Length: 64
Image (cartoon, rainbow, N blue to C red; front, side, top):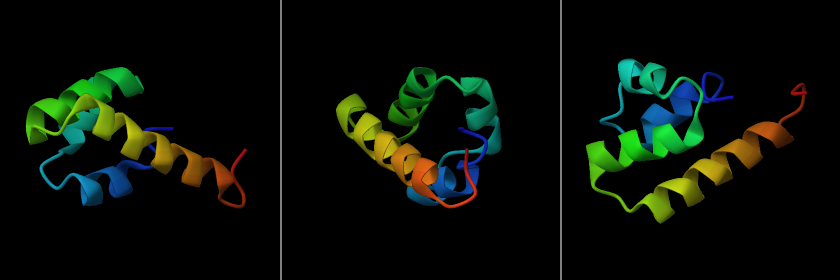
């Protein structure tokens, strides 16, 4: 899932790199920590925004 929304992640959190996304290894909680470390944004806010992205991605046509 994380790999499918890579571009959207980088547009939301401009300081996020492909390496950061790779370090998360598909683990959303790990990604929350990385984003929080990069941006200083609260974990709760990062989780909320990530969950919103995931819901949008799951609702897109052509997605399993």
